[in-house]
Figure 1 (tube, rainbow over the protein chains, first blue to last red):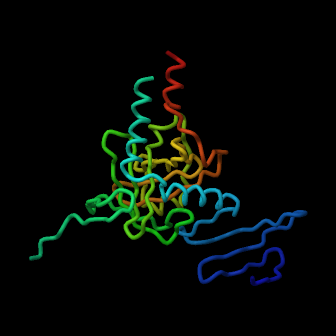
Figure 2: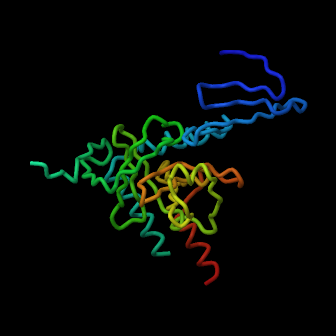
Length: 82
Length: 154
């Protein structure tokens, strides 16, 4: 890991287009300003991890096609009957 | 022969051979969170269900999606300018909101925190994270969570 020391108001460049600026230090917290192109996803790591894990699970369905479609079809039927 | 082949076959480990029309291909410039490198997906409507499959063209990754309007009531959020720009849309009406479905032990869940937004016109897509509301990543789509609400009034 690269470690840099910066003062409030100072900026770090990641490549040509991503800027990380230290805006303020408030007690235990550091306020950071981020500027990046629109295709770069910026998220707090905890949130990133929870969505990533859910996506990975959803993206590789455990059931096979027919079984899965059957299951999804059943859901609709049970909705209709109620 | 310069006649263009409008269809191509996609080999899916889960669904077998899928015929893809170019009209079904969506570009996800940002990828899907955790799968950033996969940017091209094809969308298939599953017959006689409200569900669709979003299948990666270049990987064995596929998501089941359901239109948010079919799954939950009173679901709304603001889209930021960057997302509108990424989807190349000018008005919110041009965006279709889908939820990622997760089937776990025969139960069906949807991700309300990070919906998939699609622009059918531009064939662009993005996974949008809703920051202005506390929403669950895994919300149970019990047999008729939507119907329960309507039934209650009947």
